Amino acid sequence: MASVKKGISFPVLQSWNPMTEFATIAAQVDGRRVLCRVSSTDLQKKFNASADAPMAAVTKNRNTVEIAAKRLIENGNFEKDGSILIRYEDL
Figure (cartoon, helix red, strand yellow):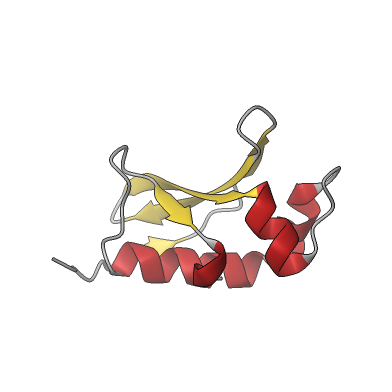
């Protein structure tokens, strides 16, 4: 069941995990932190991200990533661990 969340903001927190090859931005949702992840493969496909510096694509396209994350949060599309997985088709 989809539920609309209020109070979604995006502090300037982002990180890269070289082991999983996922970029993560943080969302603040009603006082709790939600990690929003996007794969290097999807960053390369959507934004032509460099394999050597994928976070540059996140920084440059942060607004697009945040809009996708917000939509997924509002629709309640959480993973089992409480995070949000942003896929190519979401961007």
